[in-house]
Each structure stands twice: as C-alpha cells, then as structure tokens.
Amino acid sequence: MRQNLLVLATLVVPLVVWGPALGVLASCHDDPPVIYPTTAPLDVNKLALGPGDKLNLTVFYGSHSIQAAYTLDNTGQISVQYIGSVDASGKTAEQVRDEIQQRLADGYLNDPIVSLTISEINSLTLSISGMVAKTGAVKFTPGITITEVIARSGGFTPMARKNMVRVTRVLNGVKETYKLPVEKMAEGERPNFPMLPGDEVFVPERAW
Figure 1 (tube, rainbow, N blue to C red):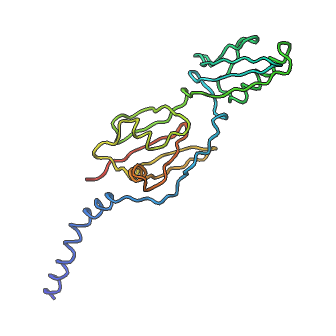
Figure 2 (figure 1 turned 90 degrees about the vertical axis):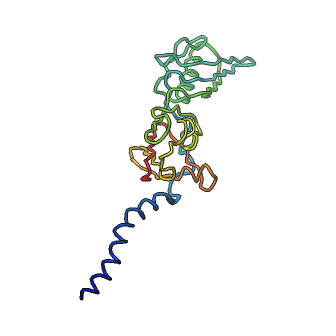
Figure 3 (figure 1 turned 45 degrees about the horizontal axis):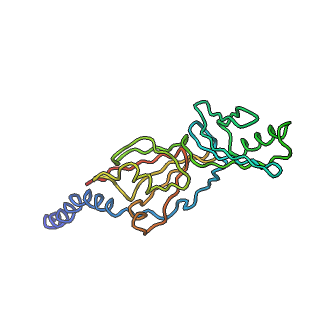
C-alpha cells in the first residue's frame, strides 16, 4: 500500500508543478480563429460630420461651376457662396449636400447639381489601452486597420500578448468583442481587421 502511494505521489507532484507553466506556454501560442470581420461595414458618406472635418464642394449650374474646399469650424459650420452658413455638425455629407442644393436652387442658381465629398476626417476617434507604447485616442481615418492602430500607438511593449488583442465594438446597438491575432496579421498569416469610429482596443499582458 505504501509503495502504491509513493508511485501516485511521483505522478501528482509533476502535474502540480507543471500545471501553471503549461498555462503560460499556452499563452505563448495564441491562435484565435478567424471569426472577425475582414471588411468594414462603413460608408464614409454616412458618417456624422464634426469640427475639423474637411470637405470638397463642386456646384455645376448651366455651363459654369464652383469649386471650394472647407474645414468645419468649432461649431461645425461652413460658409458657402451665395447661401452663407451651413450647419454640417452631426449630419452626413449626403444630408449637407442636399441642403446646399436646395438652398442654392431657392432663388440663387438654376438647377444646380451639387457634389460634396469628404477629403479628411478629424472629428472621429477610437481608443487603445494596455500593452502599447502610447495609450489613448487614435484618429480614425477610413480604411485604418488594427495593425495601423498598433503602429500609431508606438507598437507593442515587450510584455504584450500580441495574438490576443481585444477590440470591443458597438454597432447598431449591439456590443461585440473580437480576439485578434495581430502579430500574425502583421506577418500576413491572417487577414487584417478594419476599424470603425468608437472602437476600443485592449492589448493584454502576457504571463511570462
């Protein structure tokens, strides 16, 4: 009986010692499956505009045209030829375009055709925290990916868990959290992850 207990002890002790170590080793080989969006459900022209955003306006009327570039001021307004101030804050580019067209057609120009495009977005951000060189807000630009966000944040710190980066997103009132193998993305082994305004990125710390 005593001999059997000694044999059992020799089996149990290594498991107790190696159990935590196996958990650490597992974190070294994070490889979450590709169950995250690889295209952004985003139409830039449907983003709400804000102070600092830049727009390009073209108006065609008859054989003439007007072209102008605008930056929304601190109140979110621009000043358009003939019609004066236009409040663009909180509106989409399409909504602002339609308002400009309607106001120009109301006694100023005959059958104006208006094109309004976003040239630069400065009012929208996302955030990053955890094991990166610089945490805080990151400017959102259309097409920005998670690898670019990490790069803009100064890169990972030595203790970053690079293949288990979490992104929390609220879209259409639904909150989702994605686990991303960012190091594998940077190496081309996984598709990249396109970001959206308001995304929250967290880079966890590895255990060793």
